[in-house]
Structure formats: C-alpha cells, structure tokens
Amino acid sequence: MPDTRTEIEPRLRETVSPSSPGSAKAGRARPSRRRRFLFLALLVLGLIVAGGAWYRWGRAAAPDQLWLTATAERGDIEDAITALGTLQPVSYVDVGTQVSGQLRTLHVAIGDRVKAGDLLAEIDPTVYQSRVEADRAQLANLAAQRAEKEGQLVLARQQAERQRNLKASRATSDDAVQVAEAALTAAQAQLGAIDAQTRQIESTLKGDEANLGYTKIYAPIDGTVVSQSARRGQTLNANQSAPIIVQVADLTTMTVEAQVSEADVSRLRLGMTAYFTTLGMPDKRWYGALRQIQPTPEVVNNVVLYNALFDVPNQDGALMTQMTAQVFFVSAAAQDTLLVPVAALSGLSPGTSSAAPGRATVRVLKPSGSVETRTVTVGVTNRAQAEVLSGLEPGEQVITGSRRQGVDAAPGPARRPRV
Image 1 (cartoon, one colour):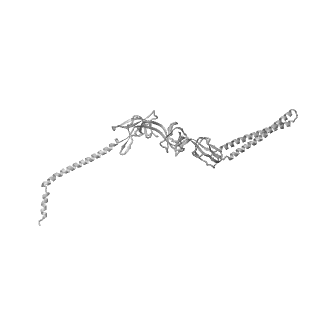
Image 2: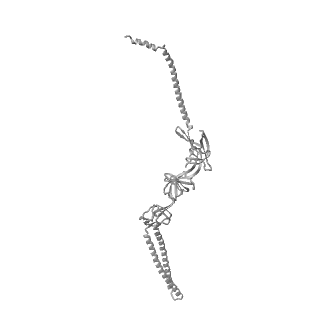
Image 3: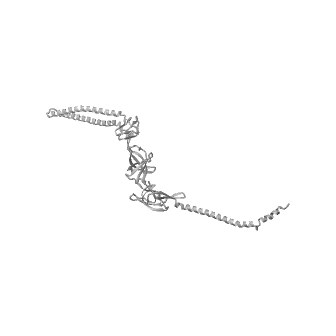
C-alpha cells in the first residue's frame, strides 16, 4: 500500500509555498485591510468625542437660554393686612329679671323677632301683689288715723284759744292755759307723725309696685331672640345677680371683631377700607370701614393680638353671630394698572405712597431672544404682584427666573412686601 502521508506532504508544501502567485496577493491585501479598519475606528471615535462635546457644551449653554417669563398685563392689585375675626351683633341686650320668683310664662322662642316694649316673660306676681295690697291697706289705716288726729287738733286749738281769752279777762288760771296749749302742741305732733308714716308707706308702695311691674319683662330694643337661658317653671333668684332669661340682638348690622397681630397693627388707620369673606360664601365680600382699634390686647399662646372693629349691614340676614371671617384691611390698591410678578423685580426699593413710588430692576426678554435690563418705577406691591408705573409696556415679557438642570433660579433677591 503506498504511503499516503508521503504523497500529501509535497502537495501541502506546494500550496503554502511563498513563491506561489496566490500567497503574494494575500500578502499585499492584508496591510490595506488594516488601514481601512484603523480609519473606520478613528472616524467612529471622532464622532463619539464630537457628540459628547456637543452634548456637554449644549447642556452647559442651555440655562442661559431657558428663561422663565411672565407677561406684563393690566389688572387690579391691592396690598392688604390679613386677620381672622368673628361676627357679633352691633347691639344686643341680655334680658333678665330684677325680682326673684318662678318663671310662670315665656312668650318668645329663639329666632322670634320682637319690637321694643313687647312682653317677653312673666314672673309669678303673687308675693309682690300681696305686698302692694298690704301697703295700700296701711295707707288707708293711716288716712283714718289722720282724720281722727285732725279732729283732736281742731278741738285742742279751740280749747287753747278759749283759755287764752279767759286769761285775758282774769277768768282762768295760768295752769289751765298751759295745759290747753300743751294739748294743742301734742295734737299737732301726732298729726305730723301720721303724715310721716304715710309718706314712708307711700314710698314702700312705690317700690313694691315697681317690683310688681318687674314681674313682667319687656323687650328693651328691636331685634331677634338669639338665645334663651331660662325655662318656664324655673325659679329665678335675683338676690345675688340678675338672672338672664333671653338675649335680644339687632342683627340688621353686624360688627366684625378682627384679631390683628402686633406686627401689623401699626399699619392700620381708622377709616381705612376693610372687607371679609366667610367659609360658607368665600366668593362674596362684605365691605366696611375700620372704626375702632381696641387698645387692650389679648394674648393667645404668647401671641399679642389687638381687636380691630368695623360694621357691615346685614339686612338680608345672611350673616350670623360667631361666624368666622377672613378679614382684609386694604392699605393700598390700584385698578386697571400694569402688573408684573414680584419675582421679576430685583433690588426693589418700595415707595411710601402712590405719590412717592419705589424703584426696581427688571429684565425684559426681547422678541429677538436678547435680554434687556431696565429700571422701572413701582407702585402698589404685595406678595405676588407689583404695580409698574413706568418703564414697561403691556405685553412685554419679563424674566422671572431661569431653569438650570431641572432647578428654577430666581433672577435676583427681590423683596416681597408683607400682605
């Protein structure tokens, strides 16, 4: 059998021999492929580097162009001092009894409207009626006694006159004259005592008649019965303090008692406009004028509060006692004026009045994308908005901040006035 290995080896050597034409072409192609691969690798690497640089530089430059803006628009603005308050009737009376006794009749109920002079309640008058009758009986007795004493006085006067006449004619003794005059004096004194007792009983009668009148309790003012403190059949003791039966209040006008902090009370002025809203009707405003600032404060949880009062009409009865009110005292206001957010202002120097406005700096974003810094005059300001008196036109875009990597930045330290 021929040696197959021996036959194959020469063929293999011929195939891989460098002197063959195929091996020469492969040698020339290998460097060309390497150059192309290297070129492609460098190109891809360059694109990656350029893309990363563009991304980084674009991210760094973006915050200078992502402005937060607001439009200068016309509207109304007010600077107000806020406070919480409660509603009370402008006039109310605690109606009680001036005499003790059992409450026999109660003629009204809570919610009833009454007029001044209407009968509200009655106390059992039995005791007081008996006292009046006793006083009148004593007066009748004293009147009878006085008639008797008057007769005795007339007789004593006549006897004294007779004795004096007899004395003049020497028909009687001096002792008889003295006895007659003494009897006259005694009769006059007894009549005077009767008159004094009569005046005393008459005075007692007036007091007892007054107490008898107090058993009927009348409404002192026009108003509404807002509370009831006693029940029919209850025994009331007026010796210690006047027991309260009902409270009558005039609900046609209500007083708002607003509690203002000591930090804001110095900004209040008598006569300034005030208004409030209620929890049940937050969109409706009731207006009034500040009429009183009570000088004595209330301290609640170490907070010093002063009561500021103003009145509002309540003809429709929509307002009730003890309602909670969100109160606003308007220190400054402007209507149909140019407004911008306070966040757009830098270096705000508030004015003291509309005649002496403040100044501030704003940045205006132009339609071309450029930013212009301007100085403007500022009028009324509050926590959210500011009135611009000059330096801006309606519709212009003011910069309120910038966005940098997801964080909003304000343009500058703007002072926000307290509301």
